[in-house]
Image (cartoon, rainbow, N blue to C red; front, side, top):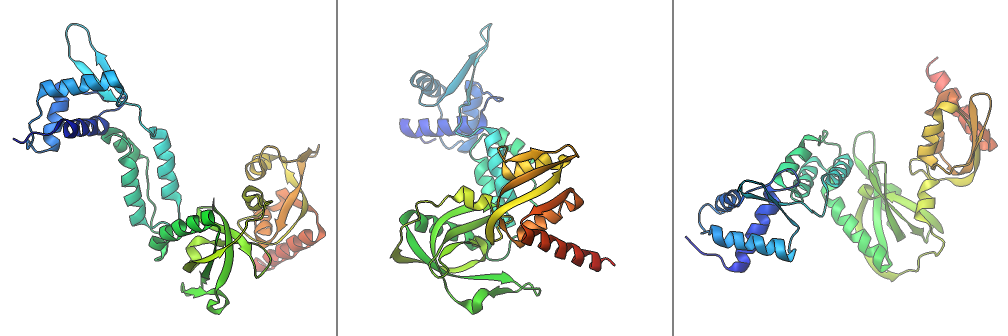
Length: 332
């Protein structure tokens, strides 16, 4: 059998403790040595006395947060590593975010989940696996390139470098077609946001002299230029995305809408708890806030049928009438 140096032995011992112990699973000294032999196929000599000395060093020096339990009546000590960087609940949140991301392919999701599992013990990772369901393939064939686009976009945002790219959408034949006949877009990238399971890039368009946003998975041939820009001081990414409905662009205006009382939680979820509302005595309350008038807003309001009535502005009210008439004609 080969002998490890003290440094190598300490590292492999730490790895075994992190892999096989947690707040629900402890190991005795003999079990730890058994795991060490299994990990290295009996090719190294793990002396129990030396391992015990290493464990005592861990306990005394706080090299790792080693928990030691000593049972009564001369029974052996039990060792476990519990203070991990991520709790299992936090890893579930990370896993759920990966699984719900529509731009990540199923194969990439499985690979990322495997990496997340390595951040905890094998026993806890097994529990995590039981909570995860990766749905059928929804991402398109370009999805594997998106992670590199996101990386490059983060760099461009941090370095205040302008970008150029082409943009496209799918047609009814499921063909990806470039917008504006393949014309190159020029943008000063401000921020990346996660909205409705997709990444969006927000930035200033020198061509249109206003803020624009683009779905990252629809961006192709991304180039970071040498042009340096200054971001607008009054840009607020939270305010920008808050006023959009389903990431549709349009004109920002004050809106006033009556909602049935049973939709109060929907409104709080969408606008926040501090949203200004006026309670009525007829089973309805009135919301007054700023929002972008767009097809996204109209579609969202139509979701609630007769439980939502537009009071103001007149152009939004007229748009709702037009869409309602189209729906009526469609079913008659």
